Image (cartoon, rainbow, N blue to C red):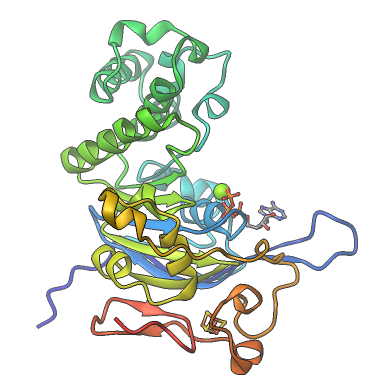
Length: 326
Ligand SMILES: Nc1ncnc2c1ncn2[C@@H]1O[C@H](COP(=O)(O)OP(=O)(O)OP(=O)(O)O)[C@@H](O)[C@H]1O
Ligand code: SF4
Ligand SMILES: [Mg+2]
């Protein structure tokens, strides 16, 4: 008997094509045929360089964007093309935390208003919403008496706590956190990650945790997916991907992560990637990573590798013709 619970979220062959911002230029395939699942209560890390399609993926999941093709299923229901009215009850369950806390909070609104707004939209009374906002302030480690202050009166870390409280107001089951600590001081980053982990345990939240480097998500995630130019190139359980990265791109990203042990740090292999990622408006043929890959061979220039199980673990998949052996 298969006891695996139905995943909370399923992304199947999802593609997002934007018309180009420049006249007569080719459309941009920001996300290209990606598939993954998120189980209730787990954290999936989504990692890759700037422009690889992480935010677009997150925004499709919370349905701020409508996918061009493919299916996004939440709780067994296809939500890919629901209209605004049908999406309204779902907005309670699917929430987002943004990268820059100060620019994602309205500077002219008090914290009370910012956190209450999603509740008022869902039909709470003003008094109920304010009471709940006060509880949320406490839950995220802010002083409830500061509820009538404005965002600029808070530090970056505190402002991100407000962003998290706003996301939690409606009692979501899945939170897409789009680089939630990238704009914060290093000393504050760990506090916010700790807070997110505590909230996950207390509220049984699932996270899609977006970051551009593998060090940020290492502690927080259960599984990790690595994206390159709109595609997932490696996905697996954290232990598998960090201990035995099989895709040359994952290896390069990991080689940039400093090691805590000074002896290991001195001998750490460093792989420098040549050049910048190509434009998704004109992806290279074959494996899109081939112009930068130290292992590229002839077949890589013509044939795109499929994502498939690689190594001893069923959950770990890699898209590479010459993956590193575990
Ligand atoms: N609305 C849009 N119209 C046209 N192109 C877009 C739009 N939104 C994103 N793109 C393009 O899609 C690609 C993926 O963008 P996205 O923001 O998802 O990347 P990202 O991985 O989140 O990058 P970053 O790390 O910089 O946040 C980029 O080439 C971007 O320029
Ligand atoms: S398929 Fe070829 S070019 Fe692409 S990552 Fe693997 S070895 Fe490198
Ligand atoms: Mg982004």
